View (tube, rainbow, N blue to C red):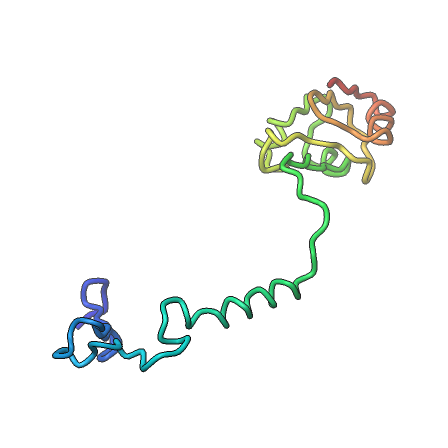
Length: 147
């Protein structure tokens, strides 16, 4: 028999039906419904008290987290050496161009160009953020930045 989704069966004895309790003495689990006589554990909600207490203690042991995580997505950083490798001389560079080439995953989050590496090609960069050193390197190579 081949193994496929419709031929898989559960292991023998792994799916036992739960015993119905409190449905009369003839069922074998009537009157006290297998809870024994009086006491805390015989009452409703009596068994979970210790579990709740230990959960609170475990929560108190966890160190408090300070600050918060911003929901504003961070801009993707692109180095000058990456632009040198990917772009041709005199080409126009936009976030959508960088996404199409595969440098960044999403153009909508924004792009920031940082001054890692050297840039020798003349590039026209539009719609990207850049560090001061990166802007200087782009203008030194003969390119221009437009926001």
